[in-house]
Image (cartoon, rainbow, N blue to C red):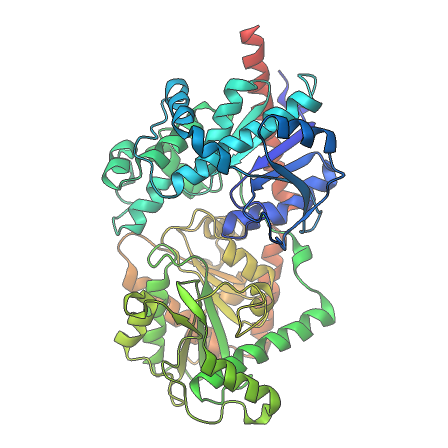
Length: 575
């Protein structure tokens, strides 16, 4: 069968993060939606969990005129759904499903799953049950929709993201075999667990047995649904060559295709709007820092940041803080640095004392950072258990005081930047505009949206060879930064203006080398003249343009073709 002629009539995508902003997969889906919606208007349908019954979800607007007759039929099949629009570019159709009723049938569902696909749910705990019931409900929703509206003359794709939705893909393979299934793992359960537990992942990857490690790390059930989904769907995909190697070694399955994650440049403001919003963001960051620390930082300050999930080693938070500590004590640094750590923690809300000082600043801007520093002048929100917080304890261990005379000051922002955090009250992307440089020194990063978002917003960044984005950047640029000497300021080379991104070699055992490289990039970038900084910012934006979805969407169509061809072959073989 000629795969090149196969195009889907309907595409269903299921994810825990549909209309539920909790991680990187949300960015994958929400930035790609418009590209697919433009090509397949209202035939790209997202399915997510309905957490918002009885209260407003700012990301979802229900439209009861959509498929009302099917909704009635679905209710008769014990499926409680809400249909509407995701409030993102393209405004695609979304079906939110209430999965709670299926908990009563959990044991029967798991029993069938074992009989049909040998998925081990016996060791399930925590979020496994919740995710599995949603996944089952999503599969049932697609089955009902298909039987009501469609038939085998239509080419239908069901793409399931991460282990949380694998059960639904397997359910459809059994009950609606005409639907072509794709399973995408964004990070293997075992790989993330090995790395997160301090075990060396990369040098010993060939020696790890996935099933054995799942038992040792107590993630048997998550690993089992992930592994069996990878083996039984029509097309198995992942997001980078880094993770593809993991899949082969830990899931015993080579992915059929790598689907790199793109970005939609519509999210980035342009022209005067960009300049004004950048100025506003910088001022807000400096106002908060000055109110917190009692300092008088001005626009000459180099503002840098790291962000993402609070994964101490995997996201490289540990080496970032170590690099900042080394920068603080390096005499070559001649410019003040304000370093942000933007990772959501178990926070108790905005600091009342900081809010009070910020209100004073709003009334008398010239007073700015005058006055004494607040207690713990490095954190913007309260923590429920500061004594067990890694960032807080590390800053104490380093003796970080954020005194006015310190050339490097560190500010921990332990909250989701959703525009209503009580301190910044600006969304993450708006604050990103105000940065000069970002650092994402990941140890475990299947793709890496944060560095891609950074360069898209013209903020040069440092990342590593253990991030999928870092490998992609090296491939696209021909690794030109390693062949270049870089600009030299105050005797310190800086490579960021070569391509707007510096990809540092990282392995299981070179922590100190990585910390030194980050320190040197910060010091070198701080010394660059404005014209070279402008070159770096333009290079960053140019690199990001090559990662737009209009280029990367071709990989998805290849996956659709593979899945549709295999589904057709299965159907023919069973006739």
